[in-house]
Image (cartoon, rainbow, N blue to C red; front, side, top):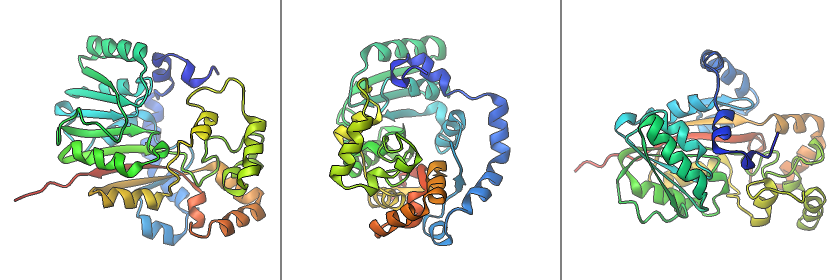
Length: 313
C-alpha cells in the first residue's frame, strides 16, 4: 500500500469505512469479545481501571466509534471541536452525523485538503467546517464554554504536555459537554514508540529494553530514507510522545475536572505474542520498569468518554 499519509484525504476516509454487515457483527459480538479479552488482564487491573469493555486486536470500527463518541450530546445541535485533525479526513466521518458545526485544528496546516474537505462537507452534507492551525494547548480563538464535544483519534499519545491539552479542552467545553478520545499505541506496549518491532517481534519492546545508545543504533539501522513526516521515524526524532500508562491518562483527566464516563481498553496482539514467545525478555521488561504493572505492557490503546460536570448554583 502507498504510504498512508501520502494518499488523498478521500482515500483515507474510504480506508476507514466499514460495511454494515461487519458493524452488525461487531455490535453483537462485542460482549463476548470483552469477556474473552478480559482474561488476559489481572483482577487488580480490572478493579483499578473499571473498564466498560476490554477489546482484542483492532477494537471498534470507525462508525461505531463515532456513534459511541457522540452519544453524550445532542449531535444535530452540537458544535464539535476535532483536535489534531491532520489532513482533515476524520472531519468527514464526524460531518456524516450532521452536527451544527465543526471546528478542526492541528499544529500543522494542510491547506489544500482542508479547503477541499470544507467544500465537500458543505456541498454534500450541508455541514459548516472551519479549520485552524493551532497548538492543542492554546485555542484562545475559541470562547469559554462554547463547544459541545471535543473529539480526537490517535492524538493524545503524541502530546508532550497532555495536562495542558486536557485543561484547554475543559475550558472550551460547555458544562455537560463531553470529550471523546481514542489514543494508542500507548508508550508501554509493543511498538509504543511507533517504531520498535521493525526487524521482527523480538524488537517490539526495544524502546523500553535498550539503553539510549543501543536504541539509537537500532533506530538508525531501520530508519528509512523516505520516512513520512507522520511516520514512526519522525515521531521518534521529535520525541512526540506522552510516555503515559492508562492509569496516568485517567489521573490527568480527573485532575483537570473531568468525570470518566467510560473507559475501553484495547489489548495488543504483539505484546501478548512477545510475552509468550520471549518470556524471559518480558520478565526483564517488568523488572526494569517496576513502577508499572505487567498489564501496562499489554494494553495498546484507550477509548474514553469524559464528561464536564454541570455546576449548579
